[in-house]
Length: 284
Image (cartoon, rainbow, N blue to C red):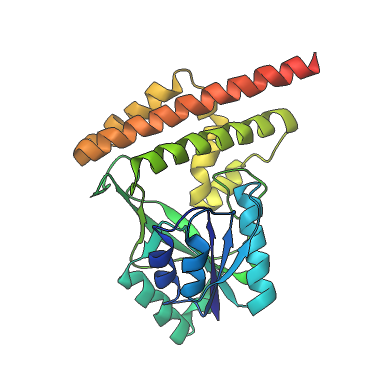
């Protein structure tokens, strides 16, 4: 049996489509909401989800709360999760249901979904966003997230097996520019805090062995061991996306996305420097 979960915060514009997608493969769905002030919880309940309200501390803790609720209530064999602004294509839904009916699902511990980003009304085919394999369908007893504020990952041992699902996970990112800008600003704050924690408290670093075993950890390894030590990262990030990874071929959307990524990189750097300065002042 597959059950699912979503974590939410003011997602009334997205949650209905997300839950419609999840319920096509999951028998039950839990929504853990971070004290939304819109109609997110009401919509989720109306769609048949079991809703819990839990004050937000960080993404890892919120996800782990959701996982524990799913296990406690439904005891599933596999757990599937989507972000509130994501839906699965019909091809992916059909592939999951086919694997369940044929018992093929049990051949692997974890199934990766290929995410397709819709930004500025365009499906990004370049810039490094066209191929991102994420572990979203996992054996229930393996599902646990590392303690990290943002860009969190599940913690797996080296013996787990992976499969890949057909179709795509569609991520629509720009319903509202104000909302998108606010989200980027919030993410840069959380990323700077995560970087600060790793720097000051010897937080978890991804090893080369882990990055080799788990493809979705390679970007984190590169950031922690190479990227964070390079000068001029905001400019380099723009060049990487727009020129090196050919984001220019995505037209206006590619240019805007490259600018947003560079801006977030700059905000993260500035906030990290501020945290380091305060940390040194506290120590002295």
